[in-house]
Length: 273
Figure 1 (cartoon, helix red, strand yellow):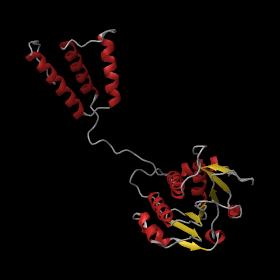
Figure 2: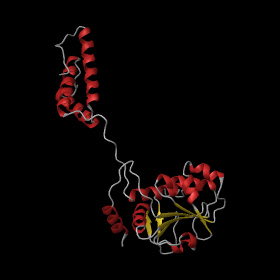
Figure 3: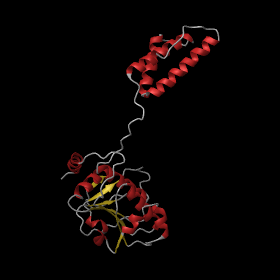
Figure 4: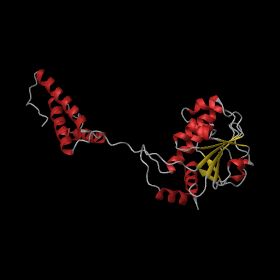
């Protein structure tokens, strides 16, 4: 199935998950091949937990378990505790179906190369029938051609062409984030605690503004006063004021009018009504 069709089918079948709604554990496996720095392993565990992934497999890690890994996990100790250590990539991928591998350099083989977002959709879709996996290579050397042999596609993360290399934990974070989004999660801003001011209150505010501008003799020097008020209306509409904010502005306008009258420019009393 082409990646675009697979991703579309996945999105259509998933109910949207709002902010704060927990996602069920995913059957997507993160596989680190020969990680050399225990701190990176901990940072990867943290990145995974941020994005609701919990299957971490380490192939021939140089140092693990290690105190630095636990320290860098920053609360993702459960991901580290469940991590499996294997002697080969083949063992790490046991039972998996779809496999993608990350790379920051061009390869001679005729691999299918996917953008990270398209790859995430395919990984999530395929994980419904069998575990899927993402391979990440050693920090300095990446993945060898032999280690890539089991991959169905390569993942490329868009980056500055002059400096495409990403830290291991950063690469995992980006892929894990796209997987999280592909699973249906999205940010939904909470409803405002105070409702927006109704149109009639906004009209009262604009009328109050107009009266105050006339009283202090503030006018558009090159255009008509109607033009000036039109611009004020537009930027206040864009601000999406709530009732409290309208009341604050009208209070300021009333204070300005009061100062003007005290200074000798008496005007007809204004009202919030």
